[in-house]
Length: 323
Image (cartoon, rainbow, N blue to C red; front, top):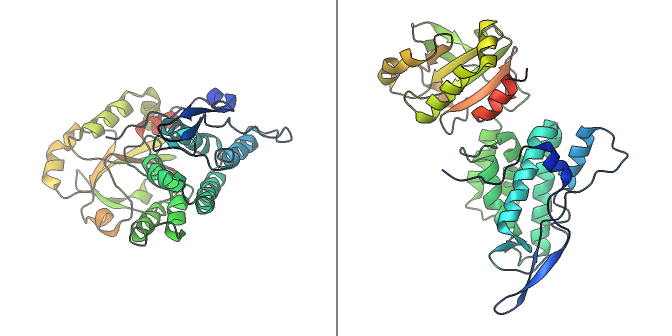
């Protein structure tokens, strides 16, 4: 599993800034390289009174000072900043987008971020900025192991990679496919309906479930990560209360082929959940959902509009426990 050590979710850290203003010169073996701190977080103009407006401004200008000019360096730095510090900054940027910006503004910001990186690389062909973010943005926003993975935010960056003449043509079909998959079941859009069969043999659809909220949970029998999610959901008093009041329905679905294995294990699932399997194998075959890794969770509202898409259990619980 990849590590993601630079993700911070505390608002006060975001508002306080991140890094020093200056840089310092260090003697290299053959030439002097510039090593600087990642620039301080931009300060929103005082005319912006609302917190949301301020965070949108910060997100939109987050990379400006980092990409103000080219800095010499070696493989340990990205445009004069140590790689670990740039990764830390990327984690803060994603945190701002996911926690403090409206979705439309967040996706616009990612698209603008790509254009800044693309334009900077064209103006400075010797820089490694483009290649660095070509690797790191998918790691943070698309890797199934990332705690801040977010396909809706990754999609504009993937589309940028498809259109960029800095990307080799043999890689573009893969980025195009990723962007296509990210377009499925975006936050704020109606989720695709699913037909499934319960353990008792009853055929049901996702849209037939009458509940204020639906937690759609794709799992496999005996999967350790799935068992951890199940334990955390069943221990949550908020989740218990939402289920008992009828406000939340948990739909736990198996979408692979070993149905006998699933049936043998299904008695382990909570009895107050709706536990079923994809009898026709349409989810995998027709790609109605981009289930790249198990477990995968979505939160839907009463009308089956996507509220949370393929999120880690921490984000799902945070949402459900603060309703």
